Amino acid sequence: MKIKYFLVVMLMTSVLFSCSNNTKENKNNKEAQAPFKYEVEQFADVKILRYQIPGFEELSLKQKELVYYLSQAGMVGRDIMYDQNYRHNLKIRRALEHIYTNYKGDKTTGDWKNFETYLKRIWFSNGIHHHYSNDKFKPAFSQEYFDVLLKETNTKLAGE
Image 1 (tube, rainbow, N blue to C red):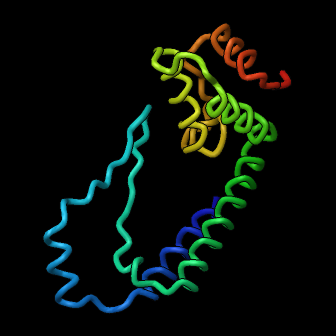
Image 2 (image 1 turned 90 degrees about the horizontal axis):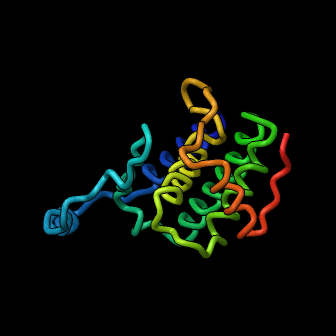
């Protein structure tokens, strides 16, 4: 967990220190823009926020490349975190992501929305356990519906 936060802090620090000074023209241009929407999505007990990074557009190509590689390192660290939280987390996440990307059935049902919420909670918490209490997530869809999803997407998930 410390590695993930360290990488995020390093990314933000490198972006903030590499930005140039604001000019009057940039300030006037920002005032003319619509207000920034910080809250992107909310599900279960989680709100997803995004942040503005002033001056990102002014970074050189080399600096943007560094930001890209730092974000890729964060993605690798994320998989390490999944694996450390529970030995089957990576297998479960990959199976659920395979269902999410390959399911061709009705995606407007309540069961599908519950499946999406379950998957988003897993993404947010880096595994199948709550990020604070470590309680295992209980899906709001039925075992029968999950079996249908597995069958229709030809997804294999070995039981334990």
